[in-house]
Image 1 (tube, rainbow, N blue to C red):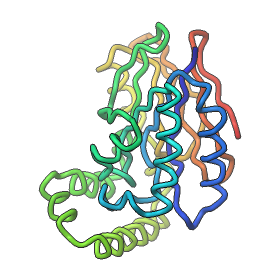
Image 2 (image 1 turned 60 degrees about the vertical axis):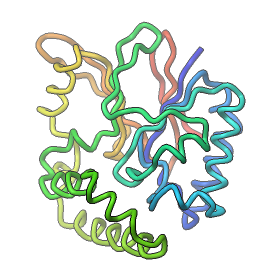
Image 3 (image 1 turned 120 degrees about the vertical axis):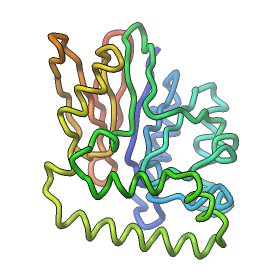
Image 4 (image 1 turned 90 degrees about the vertical axis):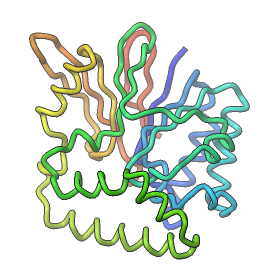
Length: 239
């Protein structure tokens, strides 16, 4: 028995190799797991559940639906790119939407899962935008616009974000150690699994004298992969 964790796939028709790897993953390794946790940014962007008919989106949803039909428990957490994924998407995939953060009992080990962006507290500019984007009224206004207009706005947001990143240091865009310690302390010193930073690694944090493991998931821009966890622990796997 084991579970698999992925994040930051950033699937889009513009990156066909990543999409190909996703379908291979869904048809192979993911189907052998008890559960699959997607910890945000499955898509490069998501403009709303009324875009489910798009052929590319439909192909991803179909692959996830096939997994759930095999009995794999699918869990989806919002990222910063796909925070508008809603109940229709989850129902179509056969997935369960989970909150960020989420505390799990993973084969006897207390495990905290997050997307990871809330840990990057030194990036003040991003945190302000995150608060704006997560505001329910702002989301309602955005989703009330025609689909084509939403798509153009999202593409514009992405371009602005990439431009902004070029002016920031790598340290600012990484997690803040104090934020990590705070999350571990508040949730009872669990193991932590998250994505977002695109810096795959295993870390050990000592918080209040307690040793806590932190796994950062890989993105799928270069070497695609996932984290496999069972009763004996976690291992990073590549595709």
